[in-house]
Length: 127
Image 1 (cartoon, rainbow, N blue to C red):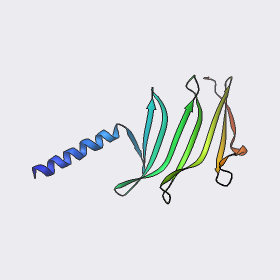
Image 2 (tube, one colour):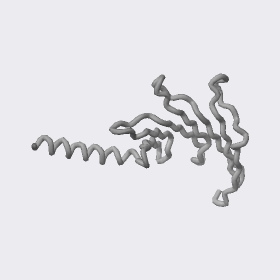
Image 3 (cartoon, one colour):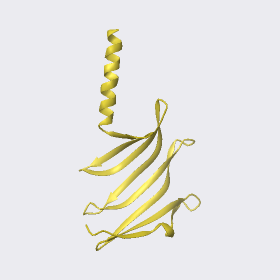
Image 4 (cartoon, one colour):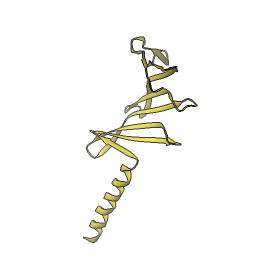
């Protein structure tokens, strides 16, 4: 009985410790990597039953003003057990405007292809 209590307590402590690094929403668990207070990568897992399954992975690049300039998104391929390119989002800044440009991965070309209808320019008075 004492070892069962120890096991339960250890499990609770481990879960609490994991929560310090991972964020749980709905059936998704987010695990972020930070360098100098800036998020450089994020892995998203699907919570299915008692396990976590790889789902999405994001890698971020920033300019010298710590503004995000690129997001690479990859999807998990369970058949090949590997991450596969999915989408790239590029951000450019000019004055008080930010343009977001979307690219979708093209397997045949082995390159990202522009999706022009998703390109958006927004004004931000806080910039």
